[in-house]
Length: 449
Image (cartoon, rainbow, N blue to C red; front, side):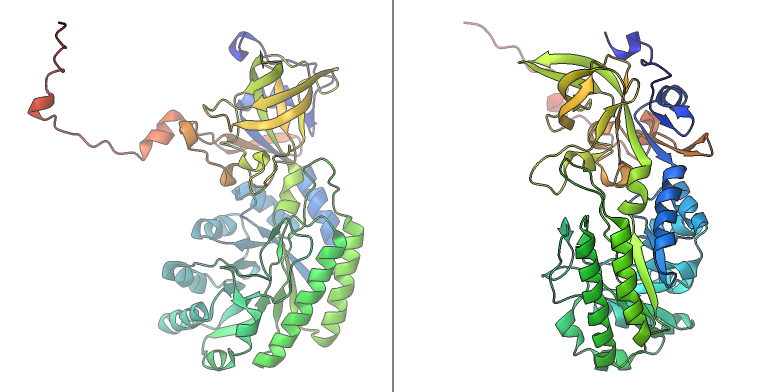
């Protein structure tokens, strides 16, 4: 029996819900696969952090985690600025209502077109990742005859990251300028005319789960940037000390102690601000702000056994949610996966949850404890609000990208229309080939002796 032969299963009373809406209601209205985002969780996450952090620290939302314009707009309505890394992310942030002066633009390989747009848009800062880029921004500003352009230099620090799931500094990287090299940059900086060096950006890594590690890195960053400002003889107006706050996805992981974390960051920041009272501090976050708000919802197509192992085959997989398969990890571990139609049902044992792709790598979870699900039931990958569709090979096997729904005040809003077959074919162009004479006839049959 397939999903087409069964109605959406599960008891309405026992079903998983987003605000007042059941999984079945959402699936019936919008179909599956589907990413569902909950603004109530977004608000609780952002507001909980904003209330704890010192008011002197600005919170910027890093669009790379989830570039959906409605997600960005909602966070902006709560007070978040934006950190963007492409022209489309910049357009998205502006479309979402983020004021240009609350946007910073970064990335190790910006084109001249990107830099021209940054200068024209009047952003809060352009983060330059080389001295050559800094000089280029100054040249573009002169050619445009614009006002001063606020610039930050991204620093690749000398110290090593503590506790990061993916280190971004403290070793050879394409990001930023080595701390030691900046000590000799005073001559380059003194020649700037319209590129105004306001300070520094340091991003140490991502998926930190230990509050003490983040606090340690923050202390090191603030100390290093204060020293650099003295060496380069600049007025320190801005320090972006990154974010990288982690979310616990896997067994034996624990979510950040946010009270300990913010208390430590506030202590380090206040000590720094006593010496630099007019300096703006920035904390940029992506995963932490959005991950908990999202669920990737799929529908069971088949349940089968192979050599004693139970497989739950669904209509969505790694082409939509590559993060859930452990990208960047040597050991595959599962995101939290649950039955949505009847989460309180008796467990049916361990199973492997797969997608529909014709590859053995299309596995959402192994040895997952689920109830005895049937075709038509709904399964959800939780904590999926960050690095979902935009970090996945959505065109693999031409299935396309799924729909995305944002639930706000009990009302679901379709915030991304799922790809249709025509969408996937529309950008392709067919070349007509003239068949050569020798190929106009089928090959002759072999004569049998």
